[in-house]
Length: 378
Image (cartoon, rainbow, N blue to C red; front, side, top):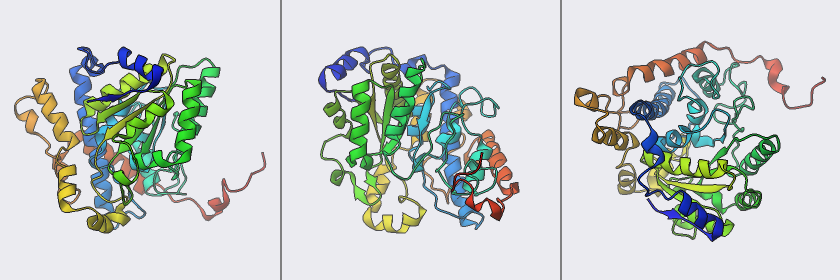
């Protein structure tokens, strides 16, 4: 894919990390790494499918913000991070909370990411959730796990991430912050102020733009005046990368190039991942989305399923062969059509553990209602 560059700093990045060189970050992945990436795509998809099914069964309340068809952005971005790196997810990135630092094992107690039990308890609004039932979705975080708390104000956490890595550098650290944002957030003033500050200070921050073509009900051509959202990087003199958001390995390549650029002290960058939102803004918007988006547009946007794209690549590399290559056909199916048989058994089991934990967890007592609202005595 192409790479946008601007000013001297970005031109230098273009020379140093030209993506068309024979050696790409993905070339260093082992076959086991690639299979793990494939499993994580299934896990992110199953999380989405299962929650939609549970809500349809009347076992779950609250709004769901689907990441269906955008899983490659999350998995590809997170897979190469170091455990001490920071992430700043948004509402459509719920799987990011448990995907962080999952590469070395899903159930490690020392993993620098949330457990599936914590995340499911959050979704079900239980006492064992990070938010202690104050929200059913993504308004959570963990300083200990290096996850910046999510807010509804997209781009609002970019200056927070800049501050986090600035403090880390002052303390002699080498952490990089990965922030996730929708393409519509780049039209906000705070986006430009924060990126400008990070560029001036050469802070190790990578801003992922999930360009899923719609900011709620506003199409991308009414959000951004440039041909590519990554073109916005030119104004700050930083690299702007464009990744195929349906190809997890291309996302991995572009994000890893940006991460190494940041970690080496050269400063921030923007990575635009071109993808497509499968459903409405949230499940409350599904019916309306069927009116402002044509069936032809949705069909075209979902034509390249991230799982199918990854499967094809693994077959080409000889990593998936024989019957194994055709197992678990979740791609191209919506939440109603997909069944547990479409997903690897370890994926279904892992999420079942989280859901079972959440269902067995208690709800907070009424006395907790004022907790974290007023300053409490030490």
